[in-house]
Image 1 (spheres, rainbow, N blue to C red):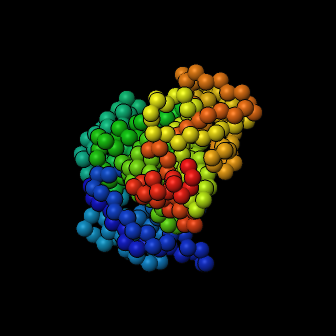
Image 2: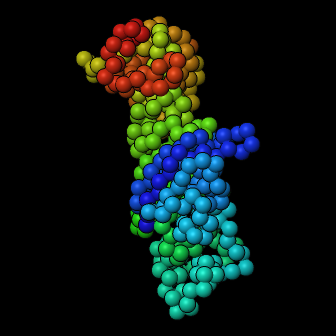
Length: 352
């Protein structure tokens, strides 16, 4: 295992700056997720760590080695791709053993390594099968085991779950996290799926337009977004944003509830809400509408648990509220979050 340190890395393609002055440290044994929309630079950054792309500027360190110009084979990393790149004519055993045979490892060493890796990912009884006889989740495990036998310092995973259906992705995500917990290898995982990022990462790096917008635990990223981009990228539905005088007010849909659900004396911010449409999602209902009255008229969404007895009438106004502790404030000009200890003064200036 090893840490990964990225120092002032940039990658320029012609006139396009794909990665722009990124600094990042991945701790030894950490599962770090690079998250962002398509074209944000996350896959380019992963490819530079792997040695598949050379940075235009900056340095990459893996453990105590400067790896910036090393060939991929000399970095002791293992990479799992979206399509898994398995050999269909080979058995599971042969697929896992392949990188060892290529490196000229002695035959007596290969079998225990393959058996060890297969047991870790739950493939011991499937070693004689071929990939076409197996599910997408099982093929993912073959790719992981094949990478594991190389004793890598770092795992690099480039959207390995994106080809799976929704149900299988959920179970595969859980297996992947359990696998990483058992093995403890430093892992860097690329995805555009915020659910994957929240469920897998020890920390998340949110990227946009080649730059890092925020680094933090899933809870930090979700509860305390660094700017309006992170606030609206994380969460489904995203954070509601309402522009007030000089500031932008943010609150999560699940924190926007009928005022009657708050105890008397609770520190809340009352908001008038007009419901247009209701979506029933089983455990939750999404209420689409707009706020008005003490706030500028703005489209917002409320997410209400189905267990809360509230029946909205489309077109009617109701008293809703947000606990003051759940309000988030952003500078209107820069989009950056404003410190929570300034909230009282901000609410006074914004007349909320």
